[in-house]
Length: 259
Image 1: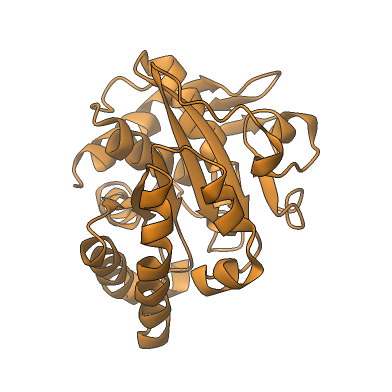
Image 2: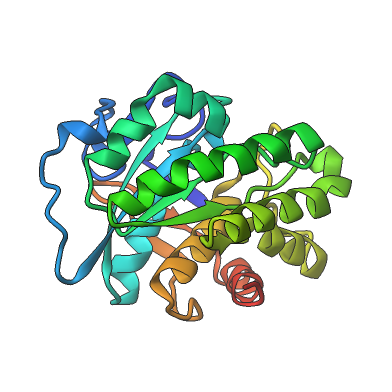
């Protein structure tokens, strides 16, 4: 049985969204800039997280899944927002300016940075250069930079090692947090390739793939074990994510195996 992802914005519906709120604007289907929300006071019992990325972040609405995990797990509740545009690198975000404005509109606890797999020399150089540029802004906003390591296309599995090394270097060079989703994907694919992580295009995540990535992000930022995060999550409104129990167990094991 395949996972079900219902009443949620997925690939296509957010292609032109730009900056969105994963809690309110996404539920309404209306893009809204994170800087339009003036409730910036830091919660005493929660974590405020800004995601900056591209379709690897907004397909299946990763921040929304992370928020749902925090609620289901009983730990600190995440308030997540994102600035995401199709195909954007960190250089593109820097030049456009929306991401920098969203960072300055904190405070945030974490700012999660993501671009493509970055397994090539050029991709790695861009990732490292703009990690260095974004990091001081993030720390000025009271936050810690984190790096959401994404995976290569299904036909380029030989690029896993390069992508993983690029993101490790980026986290190391600015003393940020590494969120090694690609490593968890690789472990899951080796353990049980029947659990389909890739969506139909062979690049973006299926619901299972997003669930695994969200486990890595949630566990890495909350510092909580993910063994008890359920496969069935309420995403707000009528939205639901339902991962079959057997598959969810495989994915939780893969997420717990990476650091």
